[in-house]
Amino acid sequence: MSKSKWLPLESNPQVMNDYVYKLGVSKDWAYTDVLGLDDELLLMVPQPVKAVILLFPITENYEKDRKEEAKKIQENGQEVSPNVVFFRQTISNACGTIGLLHTLASNTDVIKIDGPLKSLLDKTKNLTPEERAKVLEDDEGLAEAHQASASSGQTKAPRADEDVNSHFAAFVEKDGSLYELDGRKPFPINHGKCTDLLKDSAKIIKKFMNRDPDKIEFTVIALSSNQ
Image (cartoon, rainbow, N blue to C red; front, side):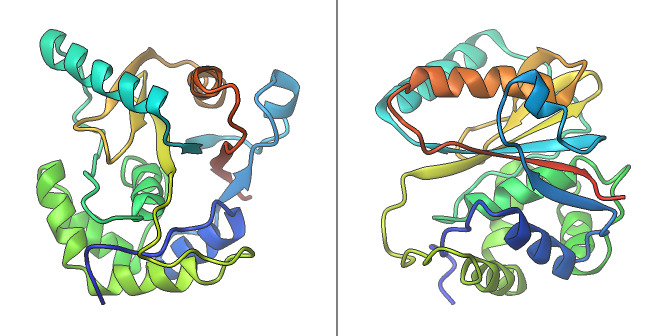
């Protein structure tokens, strides 16, 4: 199987749950749709929430902001907790899997993980984000699991060689700060103090939406308690 390009993963909680359960994640946790970003809709999401995933369109506005953001952080620096686990994305269309890894790898203190995913996280624990990306490129088992999950969605999966302009990013709280984890970015983004992961993530996601108000291709999914 080509290591350079995968089938895109559908932003479907059932597909995501089946995928991570097969990799060894405890069924005490599940991905669930976030139906809206207003407080009353956020209250419908089971608690506790340990991560948020955003599927969003890659636009000119986003690319411009992404480059400016990276430049500003490279010039001014930022504080990043050593407990944040970050993967760079080097495989085309792998952002769904990278997003799921980002929701889980920084939460192994609360989410029980066994099987192939535990082996992968153990193997990459002390590596740099770039070294972790190389391990993913060489992991045929993960590539096959991704392929199977990408083919199982409700909508017809695009071909691996099709250009896909949607992208997954994850949000997690670690040591009191909110982090945006996006494998296309050079490093995690510290968005500052976090007191409520779901509400604080929603504030950042609204900025994504406001940046491209004519776009509707936004999906928000939470990783939360399934008990």
